[in-house]
Every structure is written in C-alpha cells, then in structure tokens.
Length: 266
Length: 373
Image (cartoon, rainbow over all chains, first blue to last red; front, side, top):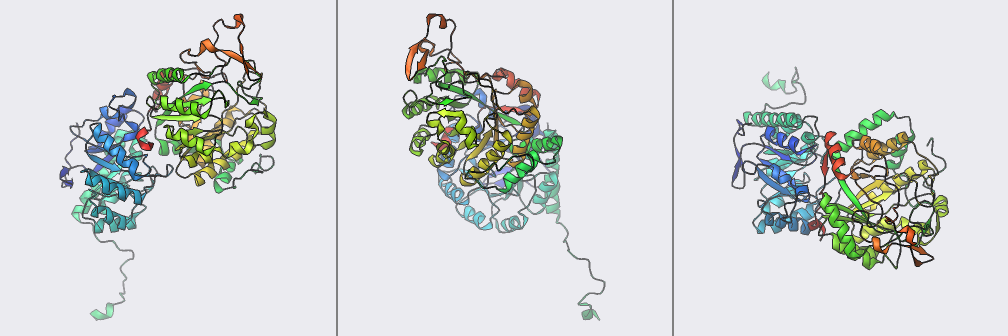
C-alpha cells in the first residue's frame, strides 16, 4: 500500500484538500490491472475518466466498467467530457454523469478537433458558466492562454488546466512562457495537463509553481506503467519541494570579471 | 516519385500536400521496413495507447442495382438475396450487443426500392439504443438524406471510393448508379456537412495499380482532414478477396507491401484511425495489431441474417429486378450469400484474448450517444 501523504504541504480545489499533486488519466492502458497498479503506485487522489468510455445508462454495462476498477473511497473520480465538440454536448454529458452517480466534479474537455484534441476556448468558457451555476466543480482543460485563464476564474472555475503541449505528444512544458503568466496571475490552482512525457517535465511544471500536473499517456504506454507512475510521483514531489525550498536565481551569463559598473566601486 | 507510375492525383480534386509527399517517401523511398514499423508502433501508442477498438458489421441487405465485377452482391450474380426487416435487423443487433460489441456498422447493397433512405433511418433508430456508436456503410447519399440518418442517431459514415483510378473505376463498375465516380468521391464531404463525426475512407486493393491508389487515398485523407477538421478520419485498404461472380484480384499486393502501407499511413497520419477487417488472415492481423491498426472487427458475417439466421424464409434470387423463388433443392441449409469470404474467422472473444496476450486492451465502448443527440 503506497502512502498518500507527501512531505509537502497539502493543497485545495474548492474546499476539498489533497496531498498528492499528481492527477492521472485512465485511458490508453494495456489492461485494467496495469491501470490499477499505476494508480496505486502514483499515489494519485484524483483520476479522470472519459465519460464516453463508461456506461451512462445505468445498465452497469460489463463492456464499459472502468469505474469498477477505481477505489472511490480513496480516489476522487473526475469525469471528463472528452469527445464533446461544444458547450451543449459537454453540459449534457456532465448532467448524465451526475445522474449516473458520479461526483459533481467535471474536467471540462471540449475539443472540436479530434486529431490534436485542442480545447475550444469559447465553448469552454460558455460551458463553465452554465455548469458552475448548476453547482458543479469545474476544472477546464485549456490552451495556455492567460486571459482565458482569468476569464474562467471570474466565472467560477475551480482550477485551470493549461496544456503543456498537445495531448499524447510527450514534449514537455512547451508553453512555458504562457504558463508562467497564468501561475503568476492565478488565484485558483493551476494544473498543467497534457504533453508531459517524462518525470522531469512534471518536476519542471511544479518547480515553476504549478499546483499539480495531470499525466496519462506517458504512464499508460510505458513498458511498466506502475514504475513510470512511481517515477512521476517522485518527479512531482521533487519539483514541489524545490519550489517550496526556493530555487536559486538563474543567470544566462557568467558574472563578468570586469563588471561594466565596476567603476562605481572604485 | 520512384515506383509510382504516372501521376496518381491526376483528375482528382486533391492537393499534393506535404503529407502526401511524406507518405510517398515512406512507402516508396529508401526506408527500412523494420525502422518504419518501429516508428508506426510508437505513433500508435502515443496517440491511441495500448488499446484496440472493436466493431461488428451488420449486413442489412444484399440486394443491389449495381453491376461491379469484384463484388459478390453484383446484380447479375445468381445469389441468394434478402433484405432484413427492421425487426430482423434489431434481432441481429441484439445478438451482436450480447456478444459484447458496442460499436456497430450497418452495411447494405445499393437498392433504392428495397433499401430506401427511410429504411436506413428506421434501422439506425432501432439499433442506437443497443449501441452507443452506430455507423453506416451504404451507397453515397444526398446531404439531406445523410442529415436524416445523423438525426436518427448514427455518428459514423464509411464510404470507400473503391478505386481512385477513373479508368479502372469505369471498367469495374459496369452499370448502375455506382458508375458515377464523382458522386461517390464527394460523399464523405457531404456526410461531414450533414454532421457525421467519424468518416471512413478507403480503397479496395486489387482493382488497379495499388501504388497509385494508396497515394490517392493519402491525398483524400489529407484533404478531408483539412476541410472536415471536426471529423475523426479513419482509413482502410482492404485487399480484395475472391467473391461470387468468380472475381480474382487483378493487381496483387504482397503482405510485406501491405504491412508497409499500414505503417506508412500511421506515420503520415498519426491520429487517423486505421481499420482492419476479417478479410485478412489471423496471422497478419495479429502482427498488425501493434503497428498502426486501431479498429478491428471480429466474428464477422458478411451476409444479411448471418448472425441469427433471420430472413432465411424470404431468400430468393433477383433477376432483372424481379424476385424469383429458389428451386426446392436450393433451400437445403441455405443462407443469404456473403459479400466476401471472411479469412479470419475467430470470434470476438478469441480476438480479445489474443489482444490481451499482446498487451492490448480491447475497447468496446468509446462513444456515447449523449455526445451528439
């Protein structure tokens, strides 16, 4: 049994407290047992599940029973609206999820483009407004767009989840410059989602001050998902510790031996 | 490009995009197959994970007004024909849902009287409650007709061009509405406009020079991804099997070239779905599971009523548009005639086992009707 308490401080989404800063996806795994092992090893307290993969009719379909594999006593299931192309579809899915007994927490994913799965900012803002009014806790997946992040915060999003790079690309925090601004301006947690391919990428996001990261592909398609989950957990913890310890300032150039302003000391 | 005779895109409304050039390099350039396969495997894993989506075809009717040299349903073939009633379609669908499928493909020959659009709409309506995902593979329709089918709950459209070579197309499609090459070519875009969310393109390998066909298919995929950016594009390159009417594939494609083509498509279009049917033998299907294929059928029957035996009592021949009763001797154990011979006859359960043994998770449900009601 992996311990869930990290040595770093806890954090909150809304009123709910979490210790792990690593969120996991549940797609792309070679088997449910490997998924379970990875969840366990990661120490994650939040996992996201695509609603299109689960049964929403209440028939308990054995061909779509991924939720049965998750210990919901310990882990918060964050249903996601992957597949939705617009606000209406996402809102409908969210309502069905609640009707099917899932928590009122939704990772809002609205991507009209099924290739790169890039989020639609306009529809995401609209759906967030609607669902927040209905009492949902909304975690929207967004482009690393600082203005959009503030707009979502204003309409009551519980977090923002800017992408590091396109989903599944394993390219790391390619949107670094924008995520720095989002973190600087945010009053709600910032969770870097998508594109993180290695524990070092996760560490980088946490070092920057992101509150958490969400990882799916890099763990699910690893030769040993559980080991990779553990590695990400360590990366996240290392990044957070470094952030809390206060990273030393970096400098692009060496200190000149003859400083340009040296005359001031003469 | 070396190895491809003539200009494969001649007469086609598709640009030679960078993706097409990339495909040609991978398919015909000096690339080692093993390296290409490695890349294809990596791209598949990144984009689709270690999973395989499963689907089942359900044949509605083998009546057809077209005469096509390669197809078992061709109108002059003296085969046993039947069109399932909507109730019988539902019975077949229930059977497939019971087997475990959640992704259904409704397939039919082209016959405006026996298989009108209103019938297709009715069969979609009767299957969407059993299947979160329903697609159709029928003759090209008008945009308003496609809209009716989308409204009934179907979200996928499969429409293979069969051949992108106009001369070969004209030669193979002897008579009937299917002779209209451009009507068919425009079908996927009309379907997209009408609201289909998954669109499947393909060529039948064996009708014309496959090297040219594959390049044209790559150009069509590239084109559709640009104009139909909201759709999930899937592609398939079924190699023709012997069928009623005595068809033998004209231009054979080796297993090695076939595998290379799957890998080249995967690397060129990392996010496109690639479909592999039961036309291919088990050994090849197993090998390709990890190299780019993302959707497989299993336990398929390619004749109407093939799963449960419904419709048997109405089997007949169709001669010059008229139904002709079967001779008494022909009834013994008779079923409707299949479209093609299935090569991989393993059941869905058997295929799932193989997938799991290879470290792939069979995915049955990957869509929910709530997404596009």
